[in-house]
Image (tube, rainbow, N blue to C red; front, top):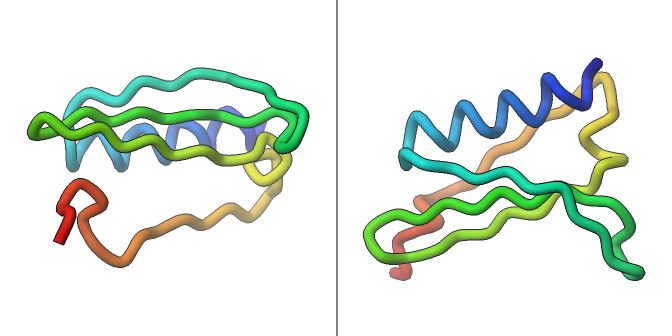
Length: 72
């Protein structure tokens, strides 16, 4: 259950700050299974990838120090 709750938490936080957020499950040989969240704001695209293994943990915290859309 933590997996779905953690995805919803990240999606909700990003949506409240930047609007539309797309969530997609993905896989590659190097990273394995991961979730890719895409935000398009002010003509810029931000992609955030989080491993499925991390999202399955009971305790999951995430943050960033500045607006990732602002290039400065």
